[in-house]
Image (cartoon, rainbow, N blue to C red):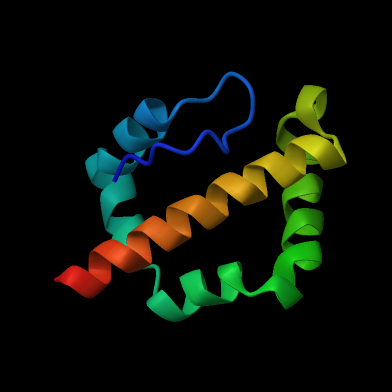
Length: 92
């Protein structure tokens, strides 16, 4: 599932994300996310609200990175992951 784009926030790699997604407990959760959810994530109309949700989560769990810029980077990475996932699912 690795992508070559560098849309990740500083200090995060696609390899790390892939390892986390392939852990058994996370794999099941990730596979249960519907294509509809991924498509919704890619819808430009939802971008601002997704950034706000990510920023709120960062303020609770990662105060050091709780900035709009970092939240935007996280959302961009989420977009890339959603796009890649949808492409891979359509090939199956």
